[in-house]
Image 1: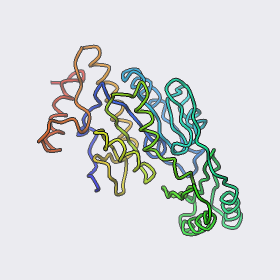
Image 2: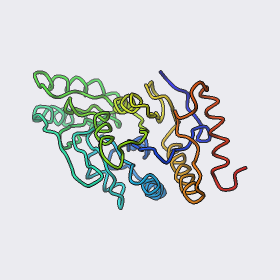
Image 3: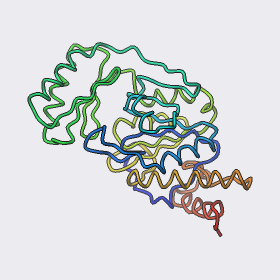
Length: 290
């Protein structure tokens, strides 16, 4: 399924009982030539702080990046987060759980040998995973895949994951869907309706997980997806999140409920009708609305 991109004005607002899960690269932040070149707009930090307060802490980042990098990029925020596709996960109370991971020595050696032979590649080592980036040399993608697949022969417990200009070896048991489901069993996420936004193939497990529980998935950018909704790019998502924060703040101040989250339209209505209703509710919820 490939949902059409919605404008920010078409996408209904978050409800106060939402649990918000967000991928990072390509979703919250624009992609960059190298992982260490990604920049976070200061306005995004402020938006996430407001959403964390409005949703009583039920905001988490679910990313392929390690927790340490997420904390650096989102400083001073320290959100509940799942890193390395769920290999490590920090609950709202600050407790960090890490999966036991198989040995990655052969994979690391293969990735480093390929980088030494072919300029333009980048090896990224994480706790429990190895990523081989080829964004600066797109023609080398097949060589990356072949080298890592060969290294994975007779390596039980590990799997190869293809993302945007990257191949990553990670534990088979780690995926974003499992991480989101674990959060939903804990406070402050328990009992809330989940919404997950992501941009890559690596986010499809998360989309499937939230939708199987009656929640909502938003695909950011191009590409086929099981997600029911789509926004064009990270800038559109950031604008939508800012509008959600504004509406939730206004609703709390006025004692009103903002527009329903995607998927909460009354049964039997079309997606277009739900979007029309959301736009009407948005106008009433935001200051200056009709």
